Length: 419
Image (cartoon, rainbow, N blue to C red):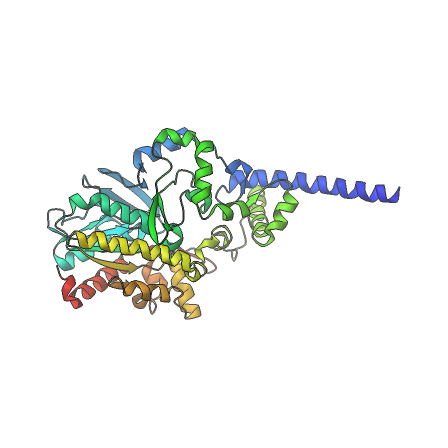
């Protein structure tokens, strides 16, 4: 009888714990969709209104997403509201230089797009002032090097007069090249389907965007198996799922999952009680650390297979540029957490990879110019209180001026690059 009583106690205790976890996780998933994921997120529901907005402003059947021609948008930043405008060319407007000759074109991610500054504060605009030419900005937020290359090939007929092509990407590009569905590495980014390259017998093979028609967003069950086959982050996604029984699910990845429940469960209950979190609780920093630990790029830059893939894309980029009589420049554009790590550890963790790129393409690592500067001088920044400050993660206008100056000097020092 005693044994039966003990068993009954543990069964009841287990049911209570599982019920409590189920209710908590259900609430937290609704409140923190990019942090807490469950089985429901394997095939997420599609919001038709949000999808229509995405299709209108961003969807692209080949690249996944792109800035649409003749569109504009205003966004709130830590420093106030800024706006951007896309011209009929499909590039970001460059005030005062639109009618100048095109000598330099730029492709890359949000750091190339110069997100969170106005059209006249981009590094392309400052470089236009230094060169007296129209420096074209084809940057797109969250792009991998793979998408930047495919965009370059698409835009070639428009940019035949260009002499120089600049690729600007963050160090995280090495992992962006591994993704087909951004939802697997950025939970909640369910419209973010894209193409990717794989290496087969040392040759690049393109896996096309699995959503080549907007109607396919409503056919995810049929599409996801192929995505799972080629998306590097599918296993990462599975590791972060909260599934029944929740106790065992947590034990499979206790460090990350317990942190999520403690930090965001605590934040949720404080909100219910209409209380503010402690001033020294840097929730955003914790959120970044536990929800997007992919930002720790150290492991990617130790993986020879991933390095080879990125180098192969760059070599193909170079071949395509030279075939069209254009010179290529590669620019590594470190983010705030990259520079913070480099400063503290005195370790440029991607240095060996960058040195390999330099053997292929003229290259610049902006860390060389930024490492001695205060991050507050470079990034969009706000000091909320003496306890808490935050960075948006993008270069401000001051940093963009420096980028333009560095590029201008680099081009001047290399006679074969001069326009």
